[in-house]
Image 1 (cartoon, one colour):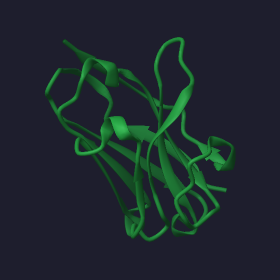
Image 2 (image 1 turned 90 degrees about the vertical axis):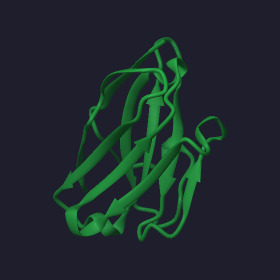
Image 3 (image 1 turned 135 degrees about the horizontal axis):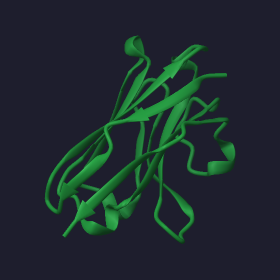
Image 4 (image 1 turned 90 degrees about the horizontal axis):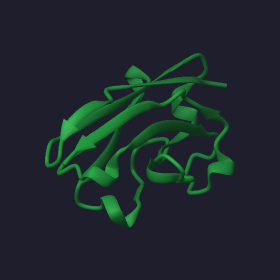
Length: 124
């Protein structure tokens, strides 16, 4: 089972960009697909983007399509979420999670390992 840690969060202005990183330790990272979730105060944790084990398949929720990109570097045990044109409603805690399914997974129940999260705050 991989252990995940997110980094790269912070406070930015609307319209700015931010790149989140999810790094894994222990286990073989390429055995997992990875998803980025976010949870705003008082709301459920929702899937934002996901990527298959080899990066060939990706998924984005409608609200971030065209603004966010997801990529991975298995040699570095890392998955990245590049966020552009950030909006105030993108403010949330962002979590990365790993699933033993090699393909893109949309349900949070299918993810086995979770990072502690990183705060992203977008000021208007």
